[in-house]
Image 1 (cartoon, helix red, strand yellow):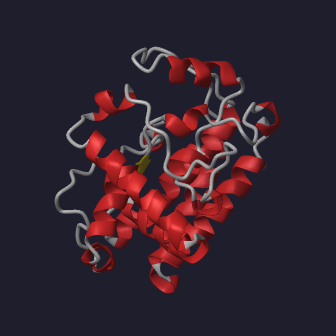
Image 2: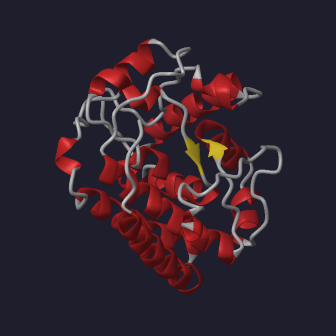
Length: 239
């Protein structure tokens, strides 16, 4: 789907979020800074001029079976939420599912993962997200104006040509926000690489020292290969 970019709109969000992230990460700590950023992320998407065109509704969960990338800071915020909010029985069930998914996906490249439907371990029986307040940036930014394309992607995982229809301003607001926070992470020296959700969660669960390494600005998951994600709008400065 091709859209016309509103460069002023994008630059404003980029500048605001990178500035706030740059201030909050060293002063409040990276996990708190992410929480503040996630609140702004939701606000920006909800304020987008075309937000009412979205088809996303509670209980629609086709996209909750697609591959999800996370950054380490998101992994530790998710695990903190689970430890605080989930019962012991529920934690055991979710952690077992994470480990099973991680084993199933181990060794697959990005394209192979895109062709594999895997139910998110945090998808509840009613089709809702059980970690909604701390859901990853990838999930926050996945929206569509029709659920038909999402369902088609779910039913035809080998067809990578399916292109769901996105709302242009929602897309630009979310992507610019993520770029801004990522700049703050990178400039502060934290690992900002992207890792597959289940593999990163399993790595953090199996190695308690992962958090300490991350907070010390060292690679937290040495046995995983992270992916450098180019900023969505990294070429704007040349326009």
